[in-house]
Image (tube, rainbow, N blue to C red; front, side, top):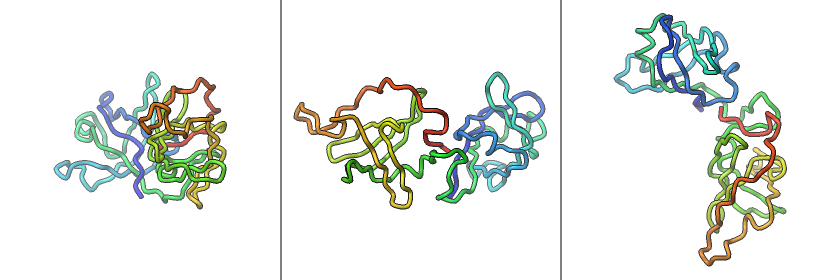
Length: 200
C-alpha cells in the first residue's frame, strides 16, 4: 500500500529547498538521505510518474525543509509544490516505537469491552493533548482518548481493540435521542511519547 508522509507547500531559499507539511511522526526516518519518495500529482504535472530522492532534511525555526537530488534550485522547486509524497509500505508493518500503530491499522478494528463488541473504530484524530478514536456504535459515534487508561490492548491479528472506558460513555443518552453525546475532552496528562498512534 502507499502511505502518505507529507505535502510540499512552497520553495525555501534559492538552492532547491521545499517546505513540507508532515503527515508522519517519523520525519528523520521517512526523509533519511537517499530515501526515494513517490509523487501524487495531476497527470498534467511535469512530475507525473516520477520520484524524488531525499538529499537532506533540515529544520528552520522548527519547520521542516527538504532538499531533493532532482530539485537543484528555486525555479525547479516551484514546479513541484503541492505534490503529495508517499512511500510503499506493507500493511502489517509497525512504527519503530513500541505500542504505536498507524491510523490505517486502527481504523476498522472492533472495539471490545468486557468481552463484548460495542462498536468499530472509524477514525483517528491527532489533537495537541492526546489522540482520539472515533468509534461507531449502535447508538451513534463515541470519542475515546487513545491512552492506556482506556485502551488496554490492540490485536491486529484478531482485528480487535480492547477498551476500558469511563462508565456511561457507551450507553445511549437519557434525552430520548438515542444518540451518544460527545464527551468533553478528558483532563488527563498526555501519555509518554510512543504511546499513541502514528500517522505514518
